[in-house]
Image (cartoon, rainbow, N blue to C red):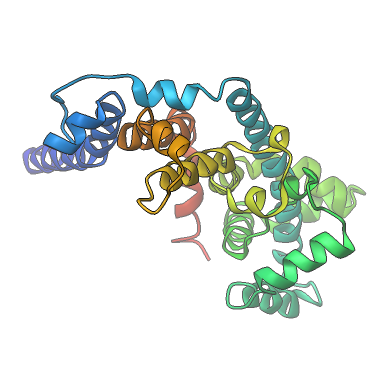
Length: 293
């Protein structure tokens, strides 16, 4: 009993150290966002800079209503896209969990094939713009994201935690597949859905490329694409080959390093707030099936 207590203390110390290792870089970025560019260039990244400044945040917040619009767009895209993706992936996982499904093996092989091959960015862009006419259409940002790995996680959870006898008894009572899926499988699938939903939400939240390729109207821009435009603007103004006098004068008022740190905090802040609420389900959903088949 004594050895067990010592082992638990050692494990607790190790976990605290690991937590600090993960937390320290974030605190360093937060401190850098409130530092002046002079301090960052002179002293480097430090928890206590030579000179505190809010210039970086002022530059990011100078986007004003555009920043608010982009935040709103990203929240809507993340919520709606995650829900739609979970619906499609959970239905596919439910179908593939049936061992007596005739096309289970071909569908599974096709699903695994998507992990190795893709249609390519150029062909996808041509189809979305010329066939589906999604150029500068926010619908392109809401399209469901189907991940083979996440479907496998959901399928494994169904096979390992939802007894076949439970679904068979529902069929005997006259329930069809849609009713079994909605009233039997979905309520019991919540832990796995929570873990997968966090991963899907992260992919939607961090997706800047789709907005960069398809969206041209400023009011439709997601947050990540807007911040990428700000980053490109900073790079352009920092380019020594730029001979435009107005650009050179503007660059003097742009805090290069602190603005980038402020943008980083702006992006990952909501994710860090949301993660503790999903952590329990995240671990439970990923570890399921490690013992059960």
